[in-house]
Length: 436
Ligand SMILES: *Cc1c(COP(=O)(O)O)cnc(C)c1O
Image: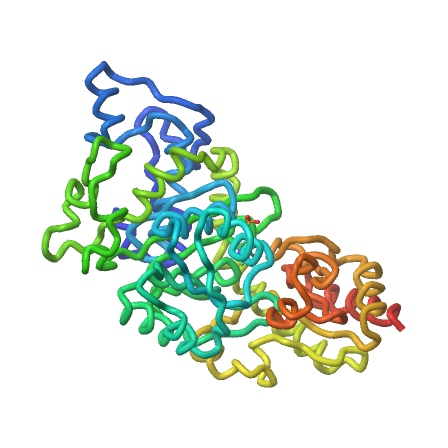
């Protein structure tokens, strides 16, 4: 069966897995093992030299995790994927796979709080400069790019500003400069949105959120489109040159990526696996891969309800007398609404901000007053979640950085879940009453 021909729902249930000959297990088995028997000494040596594909040690590869990786690649029509222990690990690996001391990346400034901290503090200690730009104008990326720039970075839908930028124009800027565009697509996984269709080259995910979908485990992934011209201008020797940590093996040539017409060459994820993951070890546990696969099986069904409920909640809040402002791109009042309609016909996710009349005190009172909604730091669990970003997720940012991220003292971020819409609305209403 070639899943490439199948529809999306079939792919989430089948891609990347065939029942094994020995047991016929229909569900993906949890291979809760650290290591794998070698057939003989030659087999062992060949695996270590990457002359033969196969499992050695679960830090680098595991059969359960591999199904998840293949399924993620198939769902995006990508050529490869690497699953790791968290979304943050995926972002760190995606950047450091091609950026190092003395080099820089250009990123939109409106980022998930953890990514912002990684970019503005931790990457600095590794000698990587991050140039933050206002992503609403793709020209800003071009103006901040120089010969030491390695990649452009942005998020599909900003959280909590819910901004939707012109990804196509951003990809053009990246490609004009010979750079890959890396997109964090955590809040809008397919079938809501596939950034590869809009020019992105590499995706990063927190699988913790809508993909896993049930708030049970932390995980992350890199997904690779394939076909990026890493070889042009000899600009990315870490992709196309000899690898000193493998006796100068040239993986680009060994995989035949240098052959004319070869498009599907998962060199980026292979390098991240055999380099960064091998050496720094943020491996996803097989149990978590299994749980995330369980979530993935119903992703299309859940994504549709998340988006449908989110629009209803946004419309309700916009009409509410105690709410001063709602920032959901699915509403005509949002500045990016037209782009949202064009790029996100199935809905632009389920995370957005709104402001309560009464300022900081009202916002604090609101999160303490919800009963059905959960006051916690996560998004895109099956349950509805609320948080006060200025006091929590964006606390480490300066007031200017908070403003750039669209966070104000009176703002609540909501992640709309799958409960009955009447129950969600009733809970929001009673909590809003209590703020006054
Ligand atoms: C949660 C999140 C991350 C980080 O993922 P973890 O799995 O928590 O490490 C990165 N980007 C976005 C957009 C997120 O929402």
